[in-house]
Length: 157
Image (cartoon, rainbow, N blue to C red; front, side, top):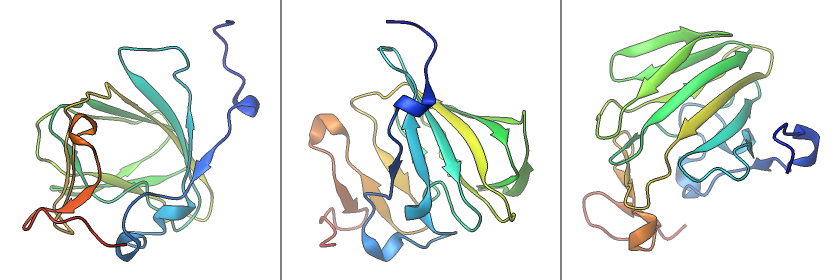
């Protein structure tokens, strides 16, 4: 396998697995596209993410067992964290250590697409919490799925 990755050969996924009621929180989440670019890597994963104007990377979230590093490649984004809003442009980097409860996401409020890379260790026991909507993503080792933080019940949609 040649180490140079040809992005044209990697299908981009669009959409989200979030319950439908959360698709438009902070922006149009389903319009994002994600390409897994860590082919053959086992210790961590990497995704190239494209956010069209008006979109969001995700719901604001944090991870229990996953370190996450985000590098903006092109365009203008706004990082939403517990501290507020931070402009992010090409070359800007943000890191989120595992277990830190500083929930985050990225939104594109500009008129041009923005591209960033998200790198993380994909820990099987990682749980993800979404404090703005009261949701938790169960660990893949526990069967995965989105549930209510309060009741533990799965979302019907």
